[in-house]
Image (tube, rainbow, N blue to C red; front, side):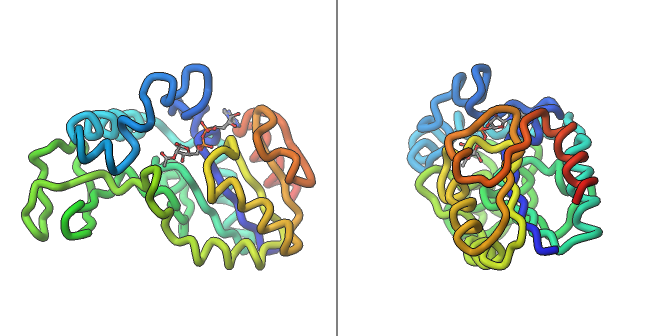
Length: 224
Ligand code: OAD
């Protein structure tokens, strides 16, 4: 079966990583305009680095949970395109391969001057230099608001061919990812939302499975 799964911060919540929009979420504590835009990096790169250093540290202490493991197992049995908005590496550490990180990865650094990419050190600051051009313009390889998500052409194509589209632990508030359900549905996919709560785009799905991802995802994978 051809399946596309989109994951969001909710799948990593039970691994101890904070989501963005919960009552105690990251965007309650930080203004996204201050840490997750190219303008923020231009005006206060130290603050931006501190924010992502903290995310990198939290990720290194977290472990993949049963939902990450179930999706890795699903990939063994089906033609699965796994697309994540998450910048953590918990899918990879659970064994998923051919993963699409549409919003970038904490594990990667990107040179704001020459575009070179390399493995990020655990901590970056304004003195971190690009190994290629030697300028001190290292930034996290994260897609910020106002930037184009990665691998969009491949994702739209996979959605057009999908028989099943599932969105797991994402609030449906950030486009283009929030529009994947409509695209998949228009092209004939059966669309399922797995979330602990209803979301901004719940009405676009054919089916809803409500509950914590560590319970609902393994169960759903077993049924497939
Ligand atoms: P959000 O924080 O917006 O949404 C998390 C979703 O996960 C919510 O719908 C929760 O109800 C759900 N959730 C929480 N705990 C859960 C659990 N245990 N099981 C199942 N669902 C659970 O995070 P995203 O939708 O991933 O972008 O946010 C999308 C993008 O906005 C992020 O990639 C990030 C952010 O700004 C950038 O930084 C570019």
